[in-house]
Length: 490
Figure (cartoon, rainbow, N blue to C red):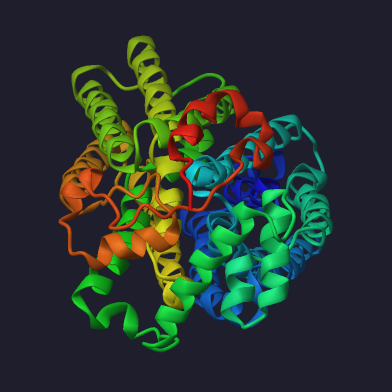
């Protein structure tokens, strides 16, 4: 399931390495700061539109059908980039691919959250981020391997490799059941119960499946008394407004950490500041990104969402402050400056991967009631991509020697925005770990201040029994103690 998002990570990074390929360094494919900003940032503009439309796709086509439709768009855009040989064609292809990536980036964590048992929801949705990191790593490796090719293959191979992944992911998606919550919400009760039984690995009439089915059905019926919900309903009530804005700001602050500055422009930036092996440094950072996501998958359940995001924001802002201070106190380009820059950029990536990389998507997937989940998650994901576009478009002008030439001093920008994210997390992020999506609806309805939600308890002891070790066997040893603590008799 998480392999869907290998494509997401690959798309986020492939334009970066290509910008420094041999054919791009001179001659017909030489690109300006404006062209580079457009090529990189317009993927995010496409993803913004795709994310906004993803809620409609999720409600009309289902989670599984929406993912398949999004992959078709992605494959069309990727093919355009391979076969067109001019800047305009590359830009149009990235926008079309972005439509698919934006939609699937909203649909996948929604599907994962709706399919997962409460005890493992954080870990399962975190695998979304793990797959993104693998995609970034794959892109960096392929770009590095093709950098010395003296033909158009130097950029067509990195861009074209994603088509293979898209086809593999589409084939894998066909084997997945539809979200049981979506099916039950559509009135397809038998199919919904069957899907739930498949995901839990239990017979349809088992106590575990029956208890969880009843909880989902009761919650959906209670929501039907209100209505199906429109986009405006995400903002009408005070409670829903807070839930909506929480996701929107989570998506924004994840991008305002500056992490995509690294994935979009690390190779060019390292070249500008005088690091001798910029490709190798970028690949090394992507390896750290992959490796440090694994602890995040575990920490998202051990620490909970609030502590994870708060500690991560403080960690990352400290790293950015040190990088910025060194850019003033030490000559940029010197051996000492470059060593410190690489060291604390590595610490920053490790901090992001193990906290905000995983935690943001988990939080966004848990915040909303079923009747508004598609629409509200679209807004949160669109916020993520809007700020991704803003970062991608502005960075060339902030860092390029012929523009503002901030160099490493751009770290001060990320320090301020990341520290603001820490303050926001303390006051505005609820603790959502451990409870079912239906119980979280009760928590939000109770009006409990978000900073006090770690101490909240549901009004009923009724919980669905979930055999978590069967659902995700690779997590069996780690999660056995936690899942046992949640088992109760219905």
